[in-house]
Length: 161
Image (cartoon, rainbow, N blue to C red; front, side):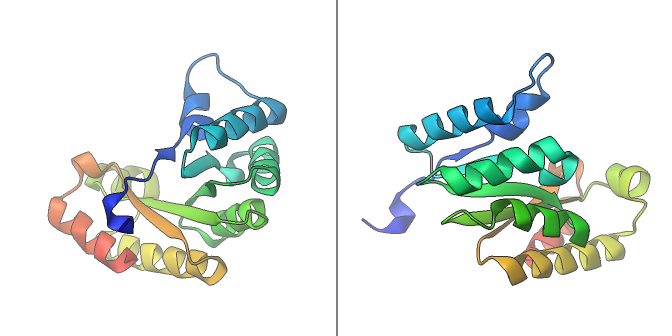
């Protein structure tokens, strides 16, 4: 089968799911969910955001060490400290990924990042290069893409590739 003929399943339950009100999972529960996702045949598990807390780091690291089969991904902003922490968490996985993101909408660039378009492009390039120095599997996402200028978002994505 041609690899292009297969859709890969990317699951964000362990990261996005914990953002739901009233949901807080410990490492054991996250491992249990990750093992079940592996049994279901999920291709990529985004295990968490390691820079967010020591608990999140420990959970991602435990999943990377113990769960076999899927690629284990860690979410990271473009800053080197974030990327280094993401790598430390997933480096033990047989197949690992760093999922790097940066905001590309005008409102997020101005209010959240306090960066210009040029600064965002430089930051995206540097972050992607840092992640790629650790693993050959780097994913990039433009945050708040829906409100982004499409041409600028494409520019940033082209830089990431």
